[in-house]
Length: 94
Image (cartoon, rainbow, N blue to C red; front, side, top):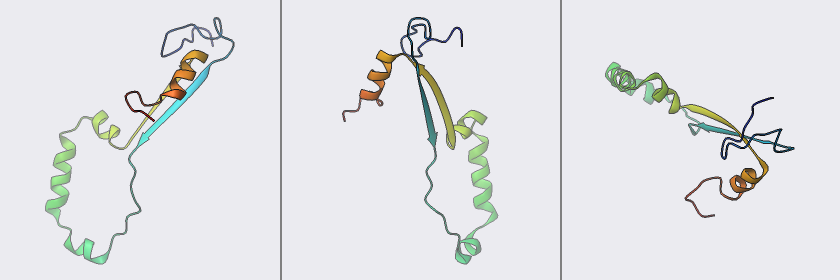
């Protein structure tokens, strides 16, 4: 645990502070339940699959991954935890 610092203000944690807070953010694509019908399969064609593959080939591995799922973990000191809880999305007023 030595060497942990607040990811917001860089204050040394567990030395300067008795407690630290962890923030875990998950950003993932939200899909509504999808139902594939017989008509969908009938109207599907190899060209549509080829177009999708071409779009994916233009992305880096990280860009493709970020469109589906990304996780972040941060350690915060008590003062920064209070700021984060008050404004988890800076620039947006609650």
